[in-house]
Length: 569
Image (cartoon, rainbow, N blue to C red):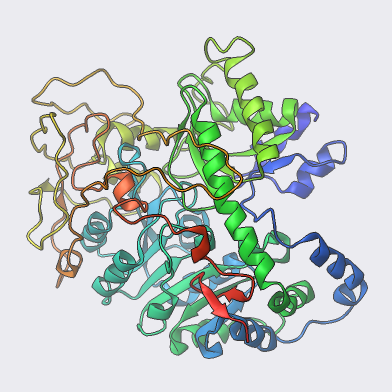
């Protein structure tokens, strides 16, 4: 693939160039795609043949109205049509949510899907960004997130479950508890665009709970799940008033004829769809094991159809991306232009094993050369035009373990700086999350957070105990996984003792109070951020065994909106 193809990345802001653009700039054949998070097993070849046979009619005539297509989808998913609004992709729905329901401010953990930060900022809203900590595997602590929302006085809260790009997962009971604690907000959005790929629990979706609450919207994707990003269709679920308000603003023909054709053919292909999800979950385990064997590469636990990886020290993501593309015809997502991430991170889409072997071979050659005696990719000089746009943010958050939150908010355009904060006790007065004990490691004394973080680097904070030299912090590596023909059972291990879930009182507050920030001294390697949970506890291994293969929809059922089987009618 010619070198000029990589120039396309320099002109993109928050996303990678389209596959069409890459193909036009190459020799006419696209690369192996590890960038766009699509289901590689659906539609089936037979379904593509059926669509090809109908192509002339599909592109010649108007589609039916959105109400007709929505009614068919709701019949398939067993959802009331008055609680659903279908859009021309989730981005259209995010746009209307912002215009209609976000009045002044929105809170979102970062890194995450770029439209949740960019869209509100484009319309002049204040975006309060809650930084996920690398030291805790980018796990979202809902208690700390709720405290952040109360302190900022934010009116809309967003959670992506699983989160993009890291694949972090929250259990249903914790999400419902958060929704209820935030009942006084204007809106709570739960973005479940990748939830169909999760297998950490049997019924992870909160769509049924959302329909009963006055201020909750659940966003769902169809293009990602069905492997049809180009068709652009998705839907939201909410109570009839909220869903109707969005639906009333959508054009009558906002869904195209391809979307209509796919929705009406899905009822005949429920078994194939269920099998495709099952295969993606198997491939995710296999791919995680293969990538984890590469020296210095950190692979984070994921419940999406992608894996978030940190490159070895000395490797710069844009260089790795460009060399994989030009030398190996492999397209990956470098995450330097995601707020809260940096160019040391890649998001790699789960693909079949034959493609994964090609990816691993390419990474070996790019990262280690032929001898594997060290990184073949040098660190790129600071200030490269298309390198990480958020590397400074990443360093600020990582080195201060969250103390630089107010600097992050200002640098990202959040507007108002955070108020000066006094040290907070390990357990809040509302019964918040207890501080996990670090076995054998002394805990640093609480340190006050300055009113404003110095730039470009925050001043180092004194720590009362000796600390090891700064080094990249890694979460525990997944074990090397075998590659059996059948779905592998997890090896029996002692279940870790999970801390008690924070009660609703820990989330709720009668009125915004001065922000109480946990102590912000450096966290020792391998210990979760103060007041947080470990990645394993949050992401589906807190004593709950993985859903077995037999727990997913069978040949005679179709997954409903929660991802579980329903009898075909």
